[in-house]
Image (tube, rainbow, N blue to C red; front, top):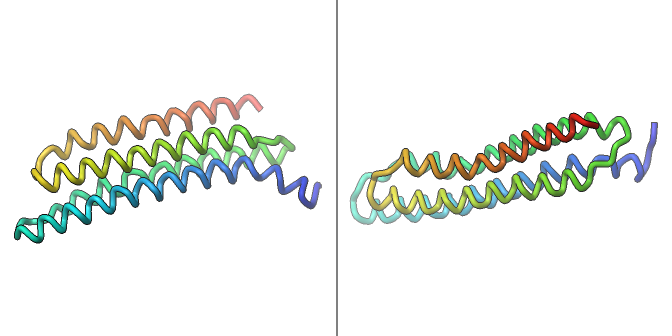
Length: 149
């Protein structure tokens, strides 16, 4: 059993994928959240009903953290056998995190549009789903690649 810095450095790949996915999720949800708050403010100032449905848009980028966790768990399994997976963790984490960031930006536009019109919820969800698909593909392809180790 290895100890010290060398053993700990095997954990860098799994930690990178989880951290970068979570950073993207936080960033994306934060951007969408600011837009939802702005849309609600407009509705309240005009004595309109503020749609609680905007919360669905704000929460959409959070699922990428789950995808990062799934990949991280598989990577820890492989790292425990002595593999170093830094690059896989770095690039998968960046891709998943960017998916969450851009999904949050799309969600911010959806919040603005729905807050203004009260219409289009299903259409906006389709766009968010397409943006999320990138993260799902990265997770699936990364798990497939990790299965070869």
